[in-house]
Image (cartoon, rainbow, N blue to C red; front, side):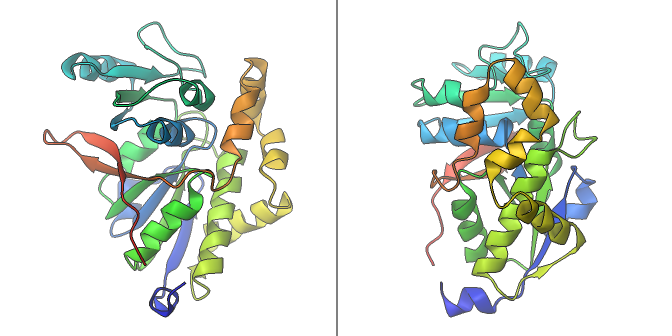
Length: 257
């Protein structure tokens, strides 16, 4: 760790549900949706996907897929893919497939909306436990004054989720470890307490998740092991816009420190 990076003062905030866009102005943002969207992004880009377009609903998602030749529409409603989707929303499904070169349109109940809602922030990354260190190192390399961790939550972002809150605490702990002068604001301090209350164990937190109960009932247990594998993935996934102004996620080179 360089002295330059540790000397830069950083404020760290956590929102347990997606906030108004105005709350993210001027911030470097990491969006988390641990069981689904952002862990799916890690799986897709690890497998060589080219681009992922986050979209808030399937009517717009289907229209976008039809306008992007060769693209696939993936996602879920109530944890399962609707008829218009080409594939579902399980990260282990995409880990086992050849997704190299894919352009993906992605619709989920929580995570894709949280990403689109953060578009006007200075920097927006799709983060999960698998690429936590890569995301944090990339942000710190740009010497941000303010880092905001946004949990996608449950029920369309109207309620907090156990797994996202735990992961936000893991991010806060890692940020404090590599930038000891960082100031943790209220939500970040609470997230850190949640993280430590589960003894820093993803499996313990996941066991308490109501969303996790639903996924277990549907047979997606393998996704929990995949989602809880901390720092297994070196990819930095950044949200920007394409030439038509549409939000799009792409893998970018990590900043060198």
